[in-house]
Length: 432
Image (cartoon, rainbow, N blue to C red; front, side, top):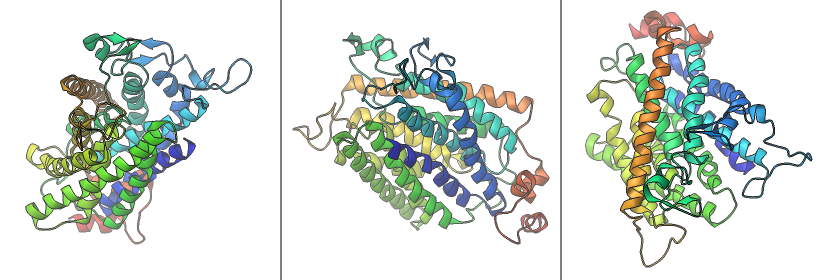
């Protein structure tokens, strides 16, 4: 579990490379700093109140747990005799804290790609702390902490389908974070893109990735770290972890192919950016389904997600919102695809290779509850993000000045350039 936690933590620097390469040269450091800034803010607040809000015994309406129950992890790690408290898997809870904080960090960092190259670093840092508190921690509690979107006796699923032995008769499937991570972050990215507005020149001047080598490297690190994300969510070194590993690989490989086929047919070229984006699309879609599908079903899910996300990333140009680095097209769409389609492709539990064949079907009840948790996640994240974004816009303000945006946000916000010889004057001249 500590190895899995370390792999997931590596994903955020990997994301910084992925996003940094997709940015323009004048903004790459700012883009990477948004990921590293999220690590700083959330690494602190998770210890103080994040764990307590996500997990505990004092749930507030099934939406969040009492943030003061284990504030600063008090009482969560050691019992009265000074022994480490064990979880249901018979290892210390402190290891769960290590694992879960990395999920909170990467989820928040994902959002930054939707608002690249135009926001104040201070506004982003404040947003990160507030959003993870009001959106991520409650969503983690609702899905993984026994709240409204879980399979507990007090959940929406239990209210709809009834309870047996303290658990809902039809429990939602979200193995590693289709709702908590990807739908949550994808909706937040969309809301921020709409409220903050477009980059100067969006749709009129080329805004191409400045270094696809960095993007490819970042995609590779994300894939590597994702094995901690998905296989680690089995919470044991067992067959389910192994299945999640294989399913993650199969879905991701298939998504690469799906995305590249779309590009080749539509544009005439299969691109490196498409391959890197296909990797992430497949990883996103298999996240909620990694423990509930068999490998052939995972290939099907990967192909569907690769094709769907390849088409979805172009929606920003048709609908007129500036999702700079395709957070909406990949994470929101991929998260929805995975969360809903697990209801179609699930083999219905822990029996993966039976007379059902290569594909299973969880049943209409399973499909219905998957749609329900996806809708609730969209609505909750959208409303909370909108409130936070509007409040920041009305007070601190989101946008850097037009001159700063044109000349290069790296120099204005951080006093640095990613590459020797790049200056504000030179960039301004190139932009002009």
